[in-house]
Length: 246
Image (cartoon, rainbow, N blue to C red; front, side, top):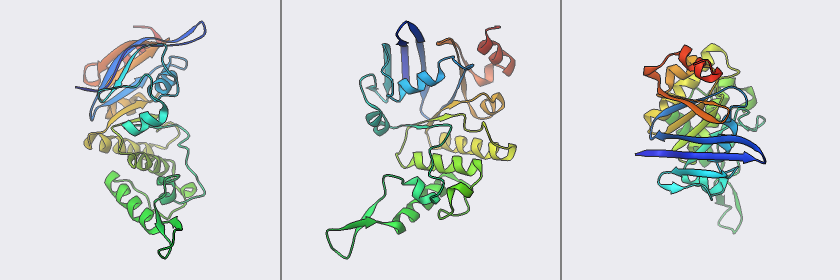
């Protein structure tokens, strides 16, 4: 059974058709690459799935529920988490604070009706999440701005895990990373899959896609032009789909 299922999804902005009948599905624990040139419709599609845009046609179902009329907060609570390319981290704060940013657990102050942030609990739970992910972060007290690009990706993924997601969407997670850092992020994707969490990976790096993804979906001008198992296609074929040469 599919975790996420899109059927004939359409999105128009006035006379412009950004999505022209997109259909595909994602299963639990499956990593699916979403590929396409600039302007192919990838960003519009992700904003439609996460509730930022409401589609003008078609159906989107997630874990048996219709997403079409739900707002971004409702969709997030159902288990869809998006990690944007800029990561949206507070770089002056430490790892633990970033993981719980805006959702800090609190405790009562000396039994009084006054609550304060429970720093010890934040650090303990942050360490648990980091270990669960297998992320290589020096300490949860380390300032995020001092971490490498790959480590910052780890923090963003760890923060996503606090929402108990069933699907994580990652937008170009390796675009600006060195080779060693890329492999670390790919290991994190593999770990999400091992935990039964589905992944949609938006990427221009086909080597990354073929390393961790199970399927590739290629968009061109708002339409799905290919939906193939990684094991049954090649990088050259995928490029041909993207540019319209195949």
